[in-house]
Amino acid sequence: TRVLSLKGDVQTTATFTTVQGLLQAGTSNLQGLTSSATASSASVTGAALTRASASLTVAKNTGLGDQSLAKNATGLKIGSYALTASTAEGVTVNNMSVKLSSGDLSNARIKISGVQFGSTQGTVASGTTYSFSGSPFTVPAGQTKYVDVYADSLSSAAGSVGSVSVLTACSASGATSLTAITCSSTDGQAISF
Image (cartoon, rainbow, N blue to C red; front, top):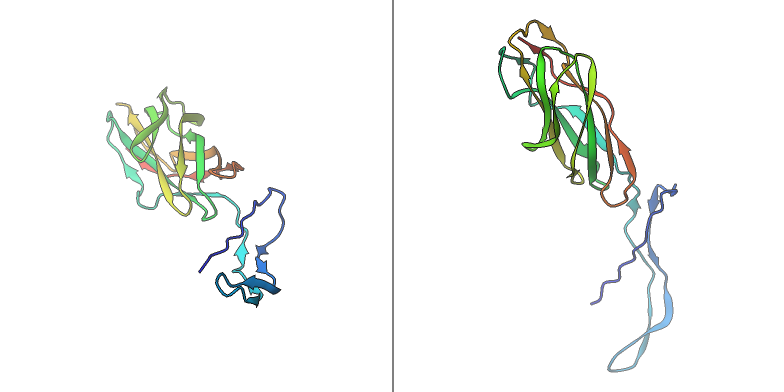
């Protein structure tokens, strides 16, 4: 038994929805190795494949609820986001932008699977968007990675803030195709002191 594989590249301008391979019938195109007798091959149609686009879906991580935080505390998780790659291919993320809506915080940073991504933003101003760029990380096809936002609270922290962090944007690309991919702006958890 032999298996024939048909492979091809999908160009970025492709507009088809599905593609299907077809091995056409042949006449007297087969010959026995020992007998040298000839035979004809039948037509065979391969499975239909659907063209899919690489994408990255961002959502508030439902595993983390709104937070009641202590004043003058360090390493507080103030937001969490789920990044899910489509089944078409993995996505490599190069940088992320997060808007913070509280002046009661300092030392803002983000972590991917517990590893810090980018630099710590020491001074935090309410309503300011901060960009984080670290070693690119990949979200495998069909899988999810979590982006956690951490900060320290000031001794003067008071009140409550709805969606203290907003993941406003990201710069990413398909892990194989290198197609540019962006993130939609997504609100995070609310906090109170």
